[in-house]
Length: 218
Image (cartoon, rainbow, N blue to C red):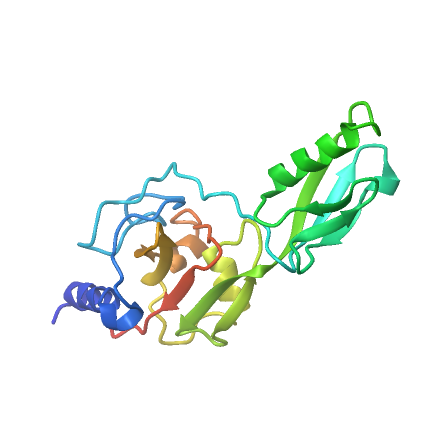
């Protein structure tokens, strides 16, 4: 069997339901690349991903930690953790529910509260520090397979680095990302080795992504 046939055969096997339930293989929004770069789908399994698509904003969950900065108001700035009831205890505003909001929505919510009799024109910025409620999964031919906490802007290269890097037999340019979109699993092949040497653009992960590094057979 030729090397190209072996590669296609391996990736076809990865798309079988036996690996991850009733998975479907298709384009995955949020890919930052095209052609053989970080936006390519598993060969023969669908159209290329839209290189211009951006991942959806990540929302806060229980246990997530974020920083609030209010311009020239140090007493209203600080670091907050989302409690089990989905809220934080914020100065002047009391309990504020933030569960399911992204950082922009939290900023708007706190701004409205502070405008209500406290500050004339509050300038509120929100920065997420830890997505403890959001995970990504890395397995296959990596040194330390496991579950890792998602961070904003986390790339596939960073995820594999956290997992200790590739093993000697890893198929570095055939890494498969599994992502759930509208309740359906889709897969995307990512050439991580090419990304590492600048031949392909990086690929940003989303919470819940599964990163699988297959074994190289040639």
